[in-house]
Image (cartoon, rainbow, N blue to C red; front, side):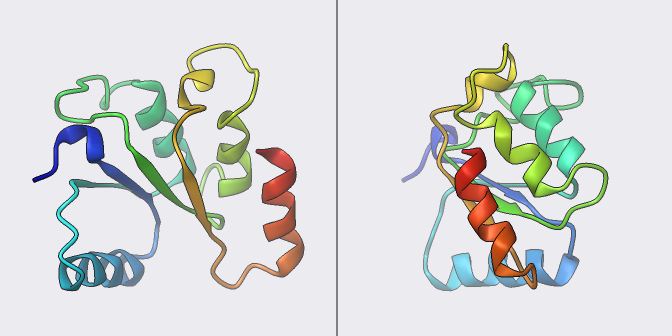
Amino acid sequence: MTSPEDTILLVEDNEDDIFALKWVLKRANVTNPLKVVTDGQKAVDYLSGKAPYDDRSAHPMPALVLLDLKLPYLNGMEVLPGFGSDQKPPISRWCFCPVRTRPGITPMPNNLECFDTS
């Protein structure tokens, strides 16, 4: 049995990819709660606990973030520096959350840049 502390946050704007990931998780019997936000700004708001994500019983801090790099408003590369950085709170609160980037069709140099920013 999983708890809200085991929540996975999916940051993805493509509905087909969201559907596919939900299907894969179900097939793999992954029962972790899954929260989905569809752009980089919503990811920052969720992780910072800004409205409408300020109720942590409904929107718990994730144990894992699956982060697309090509997102509207703020792209994944703009969201990623909040993890493990020494920026002032609330961003620094994210530093213990593992992140898996999902580059899609992004060329390899952006993948390497992810390692430089975290």
